[in-house]
Amino acid sequence: MANRIVLHIGTQKSGSTFLQQAMRTQVNRLESAGWLYPMRWARRERSYNQEAPMYGGAPGGFSWVSEPRTERLKVAWNRMSREVQSWDGPVLLSAEALSTLRTKDARKIVDSLQAPIEVVITARSLERIIPSSWQQHVRNGRGESYQRYLRRIADEFVKGEGEAGAAEGYEGDLMRGFWRAYLISGLVRRWQKLTGGSITVVTVAAGGSPNLLWQRFAEACGLSEVLPTEAPKLSQAEANIGITAPEAFALAAVNRAMLSTKMPDLARRRLRFMIVREGFHTRPERGPNLAVPEQDRSSVSGWSKFDVDELSNTGASIVGSLDELLSEFTKAPKDPTASEVSDATYLALQKVFEFAPPESYLTVRRMQRKLKKLLRSS
Figure 1 (cartoon, rainbow, N blue to C red):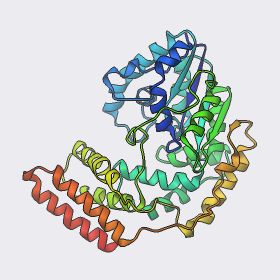
Figure 2: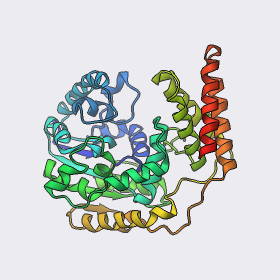
Figure 3: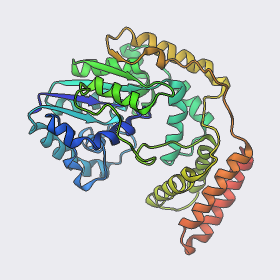
Figure 4: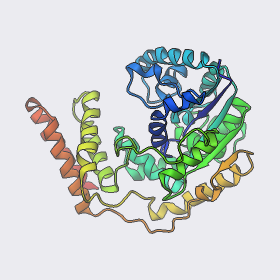
């Protein structure tokens, strides 16, 4: 049985995909040093982390995972659990969606692993997390506007970790996953109570090199003497490179337009993938990155300051600097021009026509009219 488990629980959009893809290349090296990064369970799944089995290990805990998929992934969970329990030594698991779990759902994972757990959290400033989180929602098929998204997380913000506040706020509502994950002080306290073990927070420096994040993560996991100093080289797709502001606005409009059609979910996912990977990522001029709007910056700075102050009192170990979690907004936001959004939308429409079979021409035309209407109103 594993003698200890280092559990990386995210957060999402904190370099976790880069770290997981890089760790996947080090499986043999880790095993030679006595460590397990379990991937044998994934022989029927395309994966580079242990997130999919977690969906089966905490049924009902992930709002975006359907019941049929949960049932299917219980097999993966059982397979991975056997792999972990049969390993004689330390184990590293990485699943960023664990940061969104409520206490009662996270406890299912902790109780099932049956080994001492040390938690590692990777964290970025809200200044960068909020835009990145919204564009990821868009890449996942959501059509919610950026302004509405900002208003929603502002309404959901809950200060304090008292029982009443937690029950009425983000801890009690499955759909309030943003602050369960990104209020890092609350995340630390929740997992301290769950595991009773050490919690290490790795801060992700703005503009920091991939090597810096890689080295900090290795230090937090106790793997500095095992892993190479230089991070493995990854492709753009493997590193999960984001989309820019005009691309995100264009894709959100496409998502809203698709909601008015009868296009199957699988076809929508394939089309979004095609738009992003074969369209947006190939553009020589992609426009500015998404940023927090000027009118919302004071609130975001306040949330960050509150969280850093609370985090400093949790006793968690910090690899990096708490100052890197502050949202100081040293640069003015650069809004995309109408021309930049139009160019991105035109490219998205090109991919729609390439993707759609001839018999769906009327559906595509309806999407085109819907997109034009959405763009005129934005």
